[in-house]
Image (cartoon, rainbow, N blue to C red; front, side):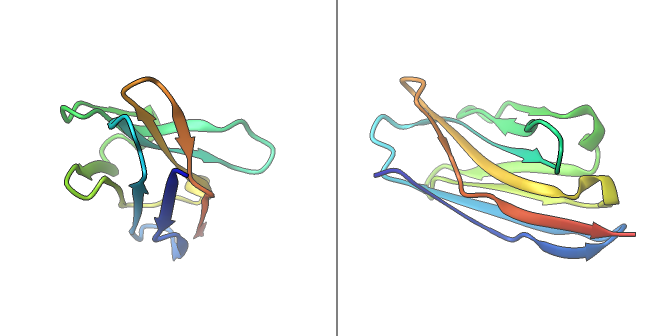
Length: 116
């Protein structure tokens, strides 16, 4: 059974920082893409950032320059460093993994709340 274990969410004031982590295990076919999505109440889930196995990154326009995604392939772990947080960044953040045969997996979600 594939497991994605997230950590690092919480409450922070506007302008503050948080770092999310997601460790993946039991991915049989190897990991290709790792990333983060988020969903605020009443909205659709949106892509925040992804990183490929080669290190190529992709970001939601609104978080460029504030968020940085990285990964440790040896640990099958992806990180999201979030700086200069805004109240509109408040959402549940979900870890995402796509393996080399295009199976997709999701974490349970971690709440990020930014107060003004």
